Image 1: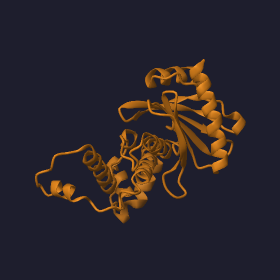
Image 2: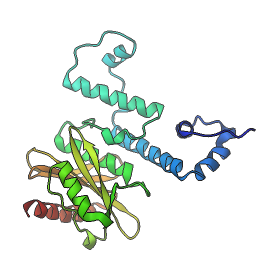
Image 3: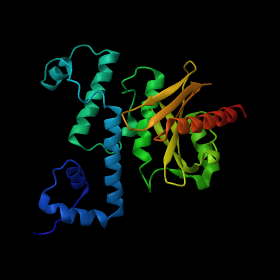
Length: 263
């Protein structure tokens, strides 16, 4: 067989099970020899996992008749806020089915099964965690070694005074952070890691709703989010820790964030 040059398209084919069997060995060798493409492949796997987590309750539901009519070229009915949300859910599900989902998760906008602000916050936080916590080389945009810049940059972009909580007492050290979309606003994501390599994330955004708090799980055995909305911001701590341990981390992060806002 003549060896050919592989490309990003082949990554999608491999993930979708469409890469010819006789090309698999050469493809794997190409991937191992290209750190950039290997990292991209890992990111696409995480993208897919995040989308499945975000839309787990939607993917198996029948497509509404009004959406089938649109697909078959029939005139669409007048769109309401609810049907608009369903259209975006169906579009995202279609993207998941055909592949090519790289980078899409970061732009999820109010596509959760919950209409409440806290449900949307928790789903966005979990999707971001699934996507970035698995990354090794590109998990954060600004590393913990530049903590002062990280806090100033995220505070200015999110519109809140953001202090990265010190979670050393809970066994976690700051890895760094990044900026993410969150509906019509922006969110800060801070990533932490313990000595065993277990990671948790803190997702913070401005949110002007009534005070509330709770726990949200995306799927069985998946990460959980302990969230609260208070004092003009929404925050979720996400991880796969035992509930009591995750709660202790969330309480510490919460108290430090509130102290930072008041200082």
